[in-house]
Image 1: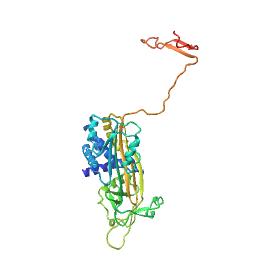
Image 2: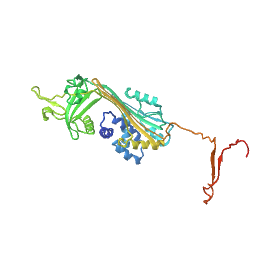
Image 3: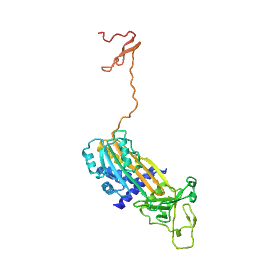
Length: 381
């Protein structure tokens, strides 16, 4: 299951980041995948094949995998999920709710304050606002949260930005520099991203792998390379197989001494806060929204992810809340106007033929009047 899950999440990560684009952002492909897997567990056989393409594995396998992840969360990653419904469910909807993993919280759809509180509680306060607005009547809301807050086993040192060779040098006053031990750096020849530099920072239970390629390599290729190298960091290139001197991503020097290789790295600290609209078809939420819509008789849906992260000298923290909501169409609230028409000065009246079989009379004005003398309505005619 592990290999299949890793491949599925890597595949979905490539899809997710490609759809987000190359702007500064943070996201949780796993967080989105978990929500998709939980929702897809309600699929019928005629829906399952399309959903399997999104999930990267059969729907029933994805459901078992999601259950296993929620039943036994990793100590370094806080995981939570909730499903909220507007009314008591029956039939297939009730069966789906009952079959969800036990750790999935259940209850009525909360208001915005309640949803925001859920997001804060399950993300160490990093996500302060639930990504979907709760200012309307949703019939079902499925949410997932992932969060981590770790300290490096060996904190970075800091130095000036002189080792940077790009315009970033003038944008920061200090940068992170790896200490003499406890961090791992290497060069990898990746089949899609080309030569890349890799840094891995370690904590008790979580590593963060940073991968940089030469300018001009698309972000999607570098992100894909980072996911692959994080899963299998063994394909390093010896420094003795690379030319000495300055290159686009490193400087290699040689001196007499004890034979071997050593790698240091300088990186910027960084942080990101992102909200991703997951409704475009590239993200794959449309098919699972259709499944929930069928269960709950809903014809409208929304899907979003809020994510935040910070990479700094002492450690790393990140969180994401992914939400999928379905509901019935609703009238837009806004201003409403009414009119009272007053016939309180001379006006005209016309009586025309409108009923009966078609004839020359149809539409013919029979009577017309100009009214200048109003009468009391209580006076009998």
